Image 1 (cartoon, rainbow, N blue to C red):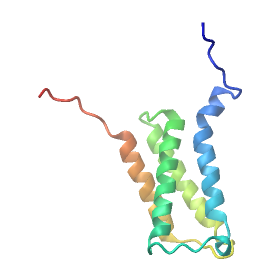
Image 2: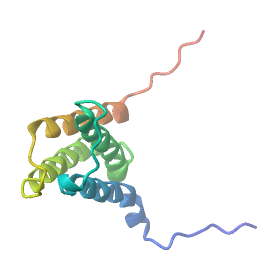
Image 3: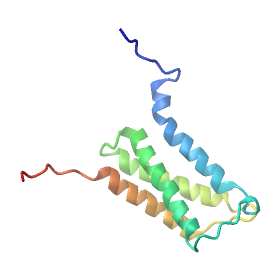
Image 4: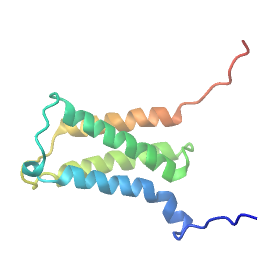
Length: 129
């Protein structure tokens, strides 16, 4: 008989760990002084798409963390994710080479909104062919 492998973490903690780890990683990325970042000149909107992607993933992980995409989990996660994006934008104000940008917050909110749509999409039963 194969024994079930137990996690050393409390299930309540391990359930929230992916969202918390992603939020922490996002904080580190967004709060590094601008002078210490490598110069990447892919296209003008690369920074905005990075915000969209970071907060898309955060929304998916947070919604899962708050209740596996149940009815209230998605709006709660969206509010928390957008609030966190605003907090990080404000935290960038004193960071050298960084600053608060409304466009960054807008693209973060867009990422959250797109993820909320993806996670709440209801699949309709397939019609017989």
